[in-house]
Image 1 (cartoon, rainbow, N blue to C red):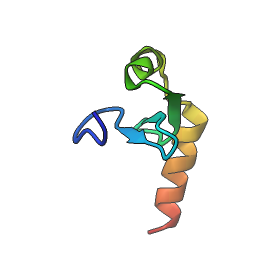
Image 2: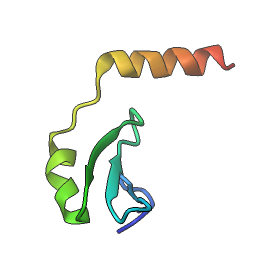
Image 3: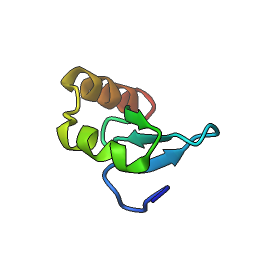
Image 4: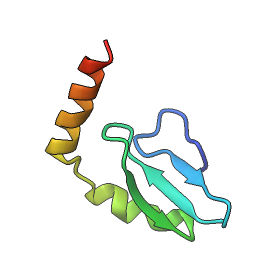
Length: 64
């Protein structure tokens, strides 16, 4: 499903027909695949990088 509302990892359909999986928490592209079903194994193994999470919190604080 493309652009799943409420999904932890929404999927984006690219112009070339491939799919990206995006983490809603750390905003990184977890994986890209030609078949949408190929994203799930990467999503299951994803762990947000603590330094990325720190940077996101600092950016949010600075924009206040």
